[in-house]
Image 1 (cartoon, rainbow, N blue to C red):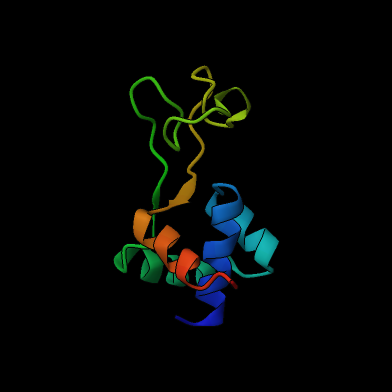
Image 2: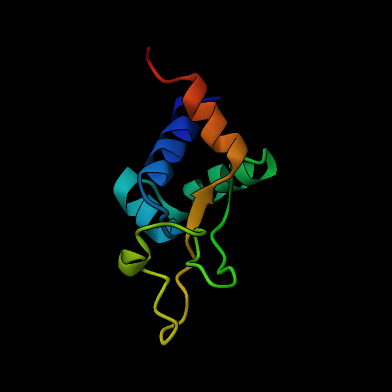
Length: 96
């Protein structure tokens, strides 16, 4: 995997992000980032963080009170999160 794609995974792993947030944080254009996100989605490394029954958009966790998507009064943000494959990729590359 290229360094820019791995950087996106590390950024999403720290906190689910919107595509606009990712572009701003990484100093990328929306178009360039869009292509990289398509590659990561097609490879099964990232997915949309969609609301689940009884939990926040990223799944059940102890930080629901701080989740930006937990408040149902506002429309959900289009957040991206790692898939199990994306998490495994980062685990394999962690320094020992």
